[in-house]
Image (tube, rainbow, N blue to C red):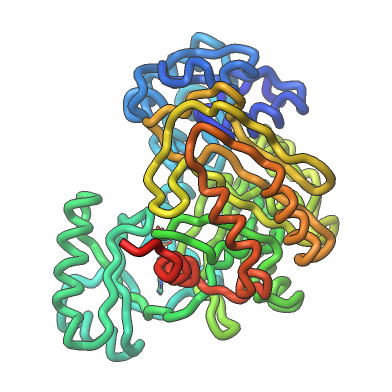
Length: 450
Ligand code: ADP
């Protein structure tokens, strides 16, 4: 096992990793920018190292500084959290070259899954169902037209190097195709420095359902069921639940086994998430994230497993603590992402938290780095905490969520909490009937008159 883990992240996820390390008796090193001197992850870590000024590129993304912090502190492993350097293959390679363990998959697996065309090709080879579309990049408009006609309109043009929901264009009919292709290519070139694009069938009312997988890197892999993350705004997840209200046990088992088998075959190491669009009973792979996800706590709630413990075990070469037959799904869990944002306009709302009260009681978990008096810096993303609620049934979970939302108080900044108070009362949400467009349509309907 490791002696000392450096946590190359900030906010709630740095705290999440820190807690797991403490439980395992591993010393922790926090790194932080000058904007995060008073952050909770810095206060709670055994040691901390300042790695630069506020902008992330100068601190949390600054590989030489993070390496120096490893050297100074003598850390023997790095946990990257999510975002920042968590899916940076070069970072994984560099740590490897310095004999520091990257708590995550191999650099090669990060690389393969980071290229969307390569990821799709790999998934298909491993038996994972994918969205019908071009076999690779399309460069020629004639070829594009032929493929689009074959799979049927509407189609979506996506950037191979894309991410964060950027670089996608929908062509409803053949007449839109060449303009959509040209726009997608030039946007991809400008945003990612790579203008390779590919074509897929555009699914009109899918749900976003993702499968949590775990591999030991030696050919054993398990799945921990699915999460439904269909409630999104601008491709950002807002509310996640496990299990999905749309799946039955047979569907869950089928897609879970497909994913676990694929991960075993590729000898995947660590935590991963295989994301699908789901429509009319069919799953369509869209991408794989080779890291811990923001929404991992809903999976922890229904499996009782600590995913960060497992990540650390696997990285240390100890293998998984469980096998598939040990995994039982218990009840239902929902996570609300609390952002310091205006709940109507979603404009960021950094500043000081003047009063803070966290909810408690059975089935409530709050993962957050904030405290009363804490000032949310304006430099990073606006996620300030996650409220995770567990119940024996989805209804019990919703009741408990409503109660927790009544209890929680975050004063001094605007937050997205009022949005969740509305959602929990909504009949479609209560019935579990929503697709990936539901939230945007709901927000458009409920927007205040201009
Ligand atoms: P990114 O890596 O940029 O997040 P994804 O491939 O994960 O891109 O897609 C992001 C979102 O775009 C999906 O969650 C979905 O809302 C939409 N999307 C992607 N592919 C399709 C498709 N074939 N049909 C319909 N919507 C899609």
